[in-house]
Length: 342
Image (cartoon, rainbow, N blue to C red):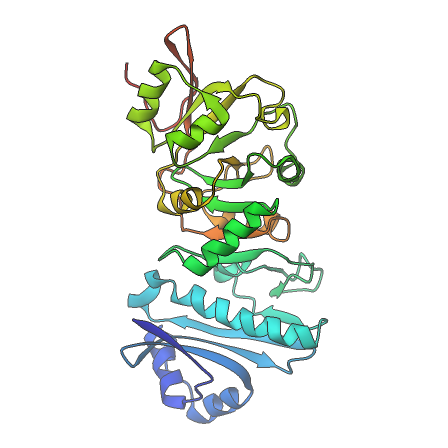
């Protein structure tokens, strides 16, 4: 089990990490000086052995630098680097409450730019400040949750609360990431249209976890029920006749609605715990590629949505197949990974 400990200032452990990641040992006097300038650090341990590390350097009021995010190679796939960053940024938030003008930087290591963007950093060129990266100073209300390894039950309740209060979330599905809200909240649906810059003549489909909830928004024929039973959960969206209580805003005035049950444990966990289907469209600005990893869209949506859930790269990385049944004939409207068998 990985444990995280604050503010360990041990020269030997620091050098052990430096050597372990292939950077070589540093002069002990230089390390001691560096550690003395550290205002906050996190060390990750596995059975008492250090396997990850990160620190903050600065004066806590005007500027801070994120330095030495290190994870031993054999632990690279255990999200330790991300967890270290989450913990460092939690501390940054505490400093910012006392000093709102505090600026937070990372060095000009462009190999890690994608990693740092995930946590709200932008290049200093984007901020017109030169090289390196800086934590965006724009107002950020988005909560970033890391569920790639496991779903946190306490955080799940925060997600449900947001959805119950006309909020918007982004979460992974089996196909692409979804931008989602309560399918019965016009206020929330309007937010999705606005933040995605989606034309209002384009309908939005819904995701849910069960046939019972599909029945909240649509009616089905026997053939449609067979298709749902055969292909869901999965990468199939089926266009059904909508019920009158479904908003015309959601369906763009059409008398039909697309429904799907995704094959993804994070998506299903949310859908199982929310009493209504979720109006869901791909997480991207209209006209751009659908996001299959949060790095594809986090820069655009950070600060716009209430919660972003990181579940790693999606399994299929392609949008669902869309079908519609007309006169007992199956019409493929959009072909995705899933092939419909007669």
